[in-house]
Amino acid sequence: MKLLSLVAVVGCLLVPAAQANKVRESSEDIRCKCICPPYRNINGHIYNQNVSQKDCNCLHVVEPMPVPGHDMEAYCLLCECRYEERSTTTIKVIIVIYLSVVGALLLYMAFLMLVDPLIRKPDAYTEQLHNEEENEDARSVAATAASLGGPRANTVLERVEGAQQRWKLQVQEQRKTVFDRHKMLS
Image (cartoon, one colour):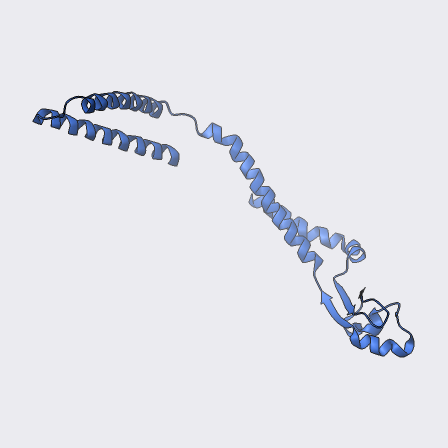
């Protein structure tokens, strides 16, 4: 997993350097964006140009100029121009790292789904204990139902037997809980 992450990071760093010319052609990292509102009978418009920060103004960015020469200054005063800068290389590296992590997690999940049935083989000893407990549960439930259905336990011996049955049920419940938890944790 560490090797996969290392390969992804190295690939992210080498690929953008090799394709620097293509990146410059497809999308620029700098631009000047001028937002011009409606002026007289001219609709508002957004102009984008790849110019330096010192040339980021209406005169250099708005092409073609929609107004004649004498109205040009008034039109340019209404326009709001902003210089924007971004790093497409950093964006690409972050996206590749994110996709690599998600891919690695998906591969790990698929691996666990394939290996999990092999790891969790049924243990014959715990299966036998559970079968015995189920049989004892059925017997104790039948005995409890018979004792509750009959006359009220008046003698000391019947009371002790009832308490003993309740204690056995509690012990069996505790055994089930311990073995189930033990099985889930291992």
